[in-house]
Amino acid sequence: MSLKSFIQKINQWFFGEHSTWGLSLFRIALGFMLIQKFVLLFPDLKLWYTENGVLSLTASLRLIGTPRLNLFETFQNFDSEKVAYAMWAVALTTATTFCLGLWTRTSALILYVVTVSFDHRNSLVLHGGDTLYRVVLFWMIFAKSNGYYSLDSILAQTKSKILPVTASAWPLRALQFQVAMVYLATFWAKSEGATWWNGSAVYLVSQIADFKRFPIPFLYSSWWTIKVATWGTLAFEGLFPILIWFRETRLWILIIGVIFHLGIEWHLVIPLFQWLTIATYCVFLEKEDLKKIQLLFKFR
Amino acid sequence: MNNIIVLRLTTGLRRILKVGYFALLLSIAVWSLPVLQRTSGETSMGQKLINFSGPFFRWSGLWQGWSMFAANPSNENLSVQIAIEFYDGTFEFHTLPMLYTMDHWQAYLHERHRKFADNFRRDENSIAWPQLASYYRRLYQARKPVKRIDLVRWWTITPPANFDSPPPQPPEYMNFENSYIFYSAKYPKP
Image 1: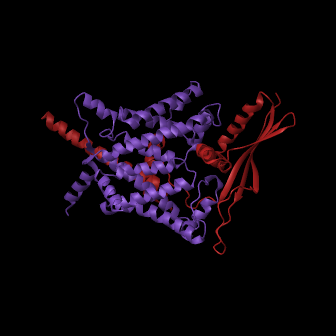
Image 2: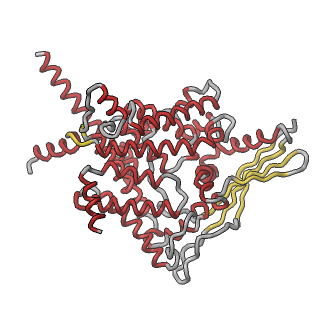
Image 3: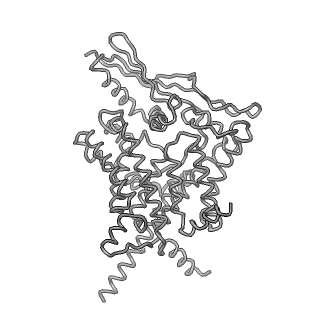
């Protein structure tokens, strides 16, 4: 292969035209997850995000450092409760329009700004899911995700227009790269821990009482089951960023990932994060995968 | 002639944008993988890229780290208690919500409280300690003047795995063995 043809292939893979079907699915799933996030946030809005709560704006800015994209800082001269409720209303509205695919790009941009503002306002209540929301929503601002299953496409049809169902692949590739990087990073970080190699890490997690949810039968019946769970976690997270790029293994690693994350959702109290991670798998799906999944279930 | 100039400018701009795009992806890799940031003596290329991209990543919300349960899961069960002493000689004690004391749905709703307790008690977040004390003072001040508020860490350590005996089951309740007052505030009598 010549250098020129190699560069052309890279250029085509990153910037060539690609179906927006996976992105459209991801838009719906991500929008739905963000609606849930903000609904769950509502009862504690005053506690976390106002001057009458546990963390003033001044203290929060000193904690996180500036400058940061933060509408709470922009509107600091207004009543903090009104600002918090107004921002929440904007977040919920734009999450809904984004999910439905209405004014999709504008919704994504406003939703991103508001989501980041909430995260920067109180960094003490953030978990891994909040980070994942931010980093994937950023790329959705640039992605054409209203080609399928969107109100934008329905409205376009009423004006005798059809929205394109393909677009340059670069936002999709960035999302795929980001998701793969999450697994690679977490695998690498865990690989530096002795308990992941000696097989006892899952035991330590099980002893944190606040994470406890529903039991998995026989998981803690012997050290061997705990070791298998520990090493299996490490193996899955290490193999995902490799196997996801090959047509032969992509669907299998995604199916294993769904089972893995559903298991964690069942067993541990880590709200929404597992569902969000499963939602990100949409960016790896092609329309032909539906037929393959159908065949898989027919065969069984 | 004008068309050629526009075409050249557009092509040039596209190339610049592509370079910026790949630089962004590379920065994401460096932010995600701390091993690329480590320095030994001279500053590494990874650290230089972090320093260059840091202001934009921090401002925009693209900052990230993926060290959940890493390098090792925590071996601590912890709780944060707020001890309030009033001028009338009485006391009240509050504990930040502990999820294992709740039903599954309540635990799901209150997970951010666990996260708050876990982050709040860390020394690097000491700026927030007077804030929580002030919050509880405001809750009570109108009704009963507050004399003093102590913030107390309670914790218990999980012993390392002992492969020679059967694995312990997940705990049903916690018995916190250690405590430490990490912040104390006194308030004048009104």
